[in-house]
Length: 382
Image (tube, rainbow, N blue to C red):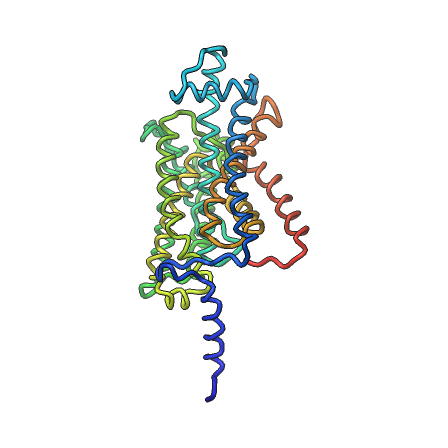
């Protein structure tokens, strides 16, 4: 019996597919090669929440007025209501923590988690290690929407959000929808077309922002604010705003978690994902929807914060492997802790001025990622 080259390749691919769990034909996931990876994942899943809690407490206590960590924990526990503690702390400290710092710190955690999870989704969908949450045009759409909000200067509030964050959110979502519609070819969404359409739309919107800044006299007075918004910063000030962002981020993250096994299958290629029973186009659409929600929520709360959605997924992938079932929850926790620490540094590194957090994420995350790649002493595998 003669075996053709195509049959040999198919047999080899099926051996790779054999590594995938067959617990659900429509939701395969990669099994860890050795128990060591499982142990490492469990350690990471235990340490990252602890790191996140410690970073939140530390960031809440540092600033112009120092508040001891023990006092912060007592204030939060007493506020939650599970335990009623005697008030041994100044009333002013409680106001600073609950009304000023804690909403911002929690918002930084949500934005970091959203960007990191969105980065994992787009890297998995596009099978491109350079993909980030802004890869298909959301940054251009958000910047265009925010600039329109500044130029129009319409005083209105939607769910506690003003013109700039609202239009940035709608601009990011609208751009994602436009890119998706442009990329559809005969009922399919080729990833190369998606990337090219996203790049083209982002460039067009980027130059549209420059055009608006040139022709608008009002933008001349708000140029510094526009520049600061594009460099990134946490703009959440009230608990009502935090509640809205929390709902969107939690919804997008929950949808992302349901797509983890499908992303594992897509990593083998769309043809073999379909062979395994995955409805490829439906899953790709769901990934885009989840990524759009997360990215839009992040830009409305924090502007255009770069590198988080690129660095954190790569860092965790190198440490814990490419299995999306494990990578997505780790990315949510890791991204949240990373941005909380970066936002803290942006507040205290140049007092009394505040440095845009996007600069910190680039200066801190970029070299750390390069060092990790260098010390790995092995070829990077996506």
